[in-house]
Image 1: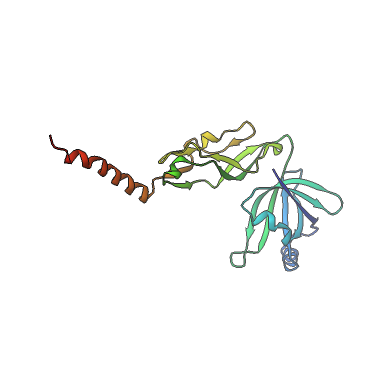
Image 2 (image 1 turned 120 degrees about the vertical axis):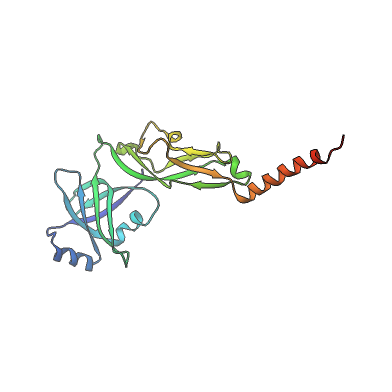
Amino acid sequence: MKSITIKGSERESVGKVATKALRNAGMVPCVLYGGDQPVHFSAEEKAFKNLIYTPNAHTVVIELEGGKTFNAVLQDTQVHPVSDRILHLDFFQLHDDKEITMEVPVKVTGVSPGVLLGGVLRLNQRRLKVKALPKNLPDFVEAEISGLEMGNKLYVTKLVSDNYKLLHPDNTVVAQVRISRAAMKAAQEAAKAAKAPAKGKKK
C-alpha cells in the first residue's frame, strides 16, 4: 500500500488551552496509539490534505522532530460540522508482525455482458474492510465483473485473496447488474413480436 509522510512535532501540553492555540495556528492535534504509550503530536493541517480528502487508502509515515519515526494508519477523524476543518486525528501504529484492520476502496475491472445488453451496473460496496499484515495491505480490492450477466450479483466470497481477509458476511453483495427499464421494455416488445406470427398463423 502507498504511504504518505506526515512531519510534525510532539506536544508537551495536551490541555484545552494548548489544543485551541494549536488549531488557531493552523495545526492539527493528533494522537498515535498502538505503542507502549500514546504519542501526542501536531502537524500542519495542509499536510493531511492527501490523506483525508481522497477516496484512496494510505498508510502513514509519521516523522517527528528529534528523529522519531512511526508507521501507522489513520483510525479516526474529527471534523468541524460547519467549516469542515480537521479538529483532531487518531492514528494506530503498525507492527510488521501484527495484522491491522482498515477500509480500502473497491476497484471495478472488466466489462459486464449484462451492461453491454443494456443493464445498469450498481456498486453496492465502494469500500471494504480488510485485515492483513502491514506489508500485505492492498491499495484496493479488485472486483472483476466480466462474468456478470443481467440480473447477476457479485458476492464478497468471489474476492478472496491469500494476502488479506475480507471482514464481511458471505452474503455481502459488492456489485450487481440491474435490468434497466429500457432493457426490460425492449425484452417485452421482443417477446410480443416473437408471439405475433404464431397468433396470426392459419391452418
